[in-house]
Length: 262
Image (cartoon, rainbow, N blue to C red; front, side):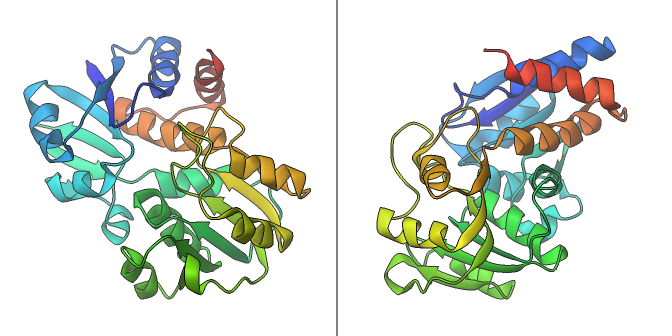
């Protein structure tokens, strides 16, 4: 059976090696590949025509994938973005595993009561909804006012760079792609330095590299992590949807090992 990840860019993705390691461990008949998708509007057609049984969706297609699905399940309806497709008799069921995956990833940080999310895309929406469910007071900082209405409706405090007033935050999250394929920061350095001076923990949703954002967090003495655990745990939930099997500890460790392979 065929599985894939849709994205632009997608060549950096380690999802195939993670899922294929899980398939191999369970002796499950599945093969997971990467699909570069320039136009997100074609995602449903590609998924159905190629008889894909399950897929993950990464930037920048999570919100359009939500709109193209035949049925969205659970928190995905509140988030308005999905990262997982399941083929159910030629119909697309869509889920968002980013939200629970992210919350699992930050379990080793002490109790989080206040958080700042940088960015306002599909990943930010998932995290903000997860924070709301967990009663975490959330602030969202974005370059422009575009997309901030969603967060205002969640009762998040919202700012753009020019209006930002820094508070104190237990956790700062970079949900943008800044630093993925460049040396950019998700916000101007002076703003970031001020934020990190008033924060305890930092997490970047980008995985597998020390981004400029994480370097600044390290320099400021924060406890930090990249997006590997988030990728792993959202992947485990998607994997369970793909296979219909609960992932035990050994399966999760097989997937983590696959993720770490170069």
